[in-house]
Amino acid sequence: MEAASHPHQHHEMPTSGGALTSVALSATLHCLTGCAIGEVLGMVIGTALGFSDWGTIALAVALAFLFGYALTSLPLLRSGLALSAVVPIALASDTLSIAIMEVVDNALMLSIPGAMEAGLGDVLFWGALSVALVVAGMFAFPANRWLIARGKGHAVVHETGIHGGPSPKLVGAIAVAAALFGTTVLVAEALSSDDEGMGHGDMPAQKSGAGHDGGSPAGGHDEASRPDPVRGLAPSADGLTLRLTDAELPRARRSQLRFQVVGDHGRPVRDFEVEHDKRMHFIVARDDLTGFQHLHPRMSADGTWSTPVTLPDAGEYRVFADFKHEGENQTLARSVTVDGPVERQPLPAPAATATTKDGYEVQLDAEASRAGRPAELAFEVTHGGQPVEVQDYLGARGHLVALRQNDLAYLHTHPAEGQGHGGGNGTGPVSFETEFPTAGRYRLFVQFKHEDAVHTAAFTREVAR
Image (cartoon, rainbow, N blue to C red; front, side):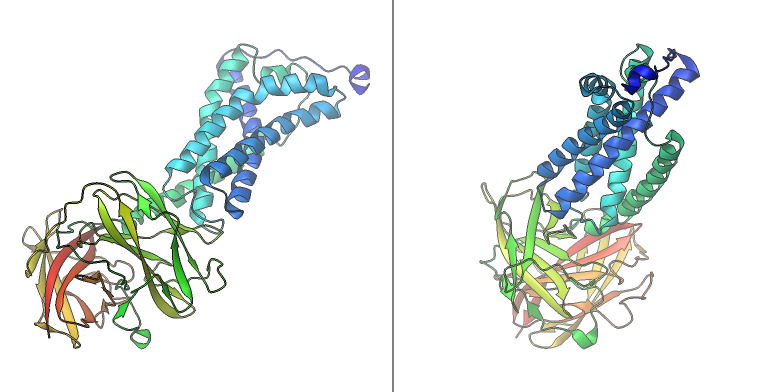
């Protein structure tokens, strides 16, 4: 055999100092290469085929071990070593290192909000995966160094004198680039995460009936495309249907709420247009108009939207999917149940001032509202008695959701003239226009952004006939 006619040199392995660190770094980068190839392939295949999180991770782990062992084994096999000799060398060299990398990078993918649910076309997916792999390599490095110093791990390969795989310098440069890219993506995601936030300052409200309505959040609707004031009275409209994966969620525990919007053909719709800087707005409120949340889910490649949500109290909640498809604004709604004893809250009396949980005072300035007539609602924000300079939020100076008592009708609202896209930051009233279709009481949730955080104030509005 070739191995017999060309004996391999045996190298003395360092046991301490800079030389050991250099060998351990080279071994880690070698192992990271095979592990990364398998991990990326597994994540891409699992995500593209719509596997569950754990199904995707299982595939990624299996491929990481396969490619990790292969990268070590192929040069040994090409040199003429028998497979029976190569397998023990690869197992001894890479098993612990790959195991550490897989535990770390998959744990990070699961812990980064939205990373596993993000589709292949979402930069968050690639940013999170890049960071996860680089951090995994950092965790594996000290283990490799410890093993090599004791003549184990990658030292077993070095004893053969046979080396292969890509240049450690090239892999190191790619790892640095991946770390910079991933860190940039995650920092940008963190800075914009307040857009995904819950309502701060939701106030108790009276029990409502089995509502079937939904509507559109405000924040930059075009006047020319303004829809009817009330939308989302059912889970289906205009050939589209909202389907929830689970109609019951746990109480006071973070969980993933998953859903699809399907067409007449029964297949998920995936071509959504950006509206208010997002492709999907997801509103949650309990049927007594408490527990308001405004979320922005992420869509996976199979058309499934997913968002983390925590529902602290038992009861029935309405969820509203608000989006734009084929040029039309749509709002579809369904109910979600949280099991447990329900303590419904009475609807607060109408008041001109509301205070958020974080101490902002919001003053409502508007004429008496009458059913069927256009209404302008102006909100002025102060903190500690001083006017607040609000920042743009979802393409406007503020955002307003209006829900009707009893059926949770979700009204269309939009910023007043000059406060939509390009309105810019500033003090002064944050104004919206809407039309209350019937007399009765409505709950208004006004959202604004200050110091890079989103705040929510809630008002009760009485509408006369």
